[in-house]
Length: 99
Image 1: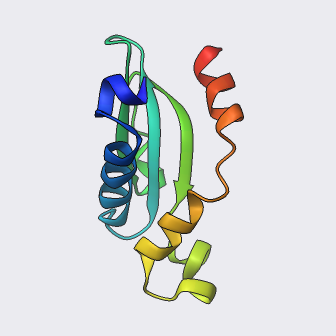
Image 2 (image 1 turned 180 degrees about the vertical axis):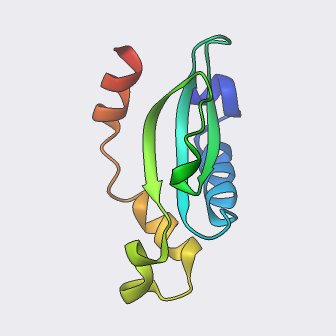
């Protein structure tokens, strides 16, 4: 699905990193399954108190609030997001998608 919906893994990763790095303030980057269109999408979630509904199922989520990365990465959010890709459990992401 990553190949179909993003044109390949590198294109997906570049899109995910760029989108997530641009989250304003506190929030998350999300790879989600859009149920109505049967496709994967990258979303930005900001301000957790807003209770947004997108008709999607979250498959992979990264916390980009400063408390998640500042001690190790300081203001280098993209470095943190790229390092995240080194520890993703893709088997778990596939299980969530399959379910």
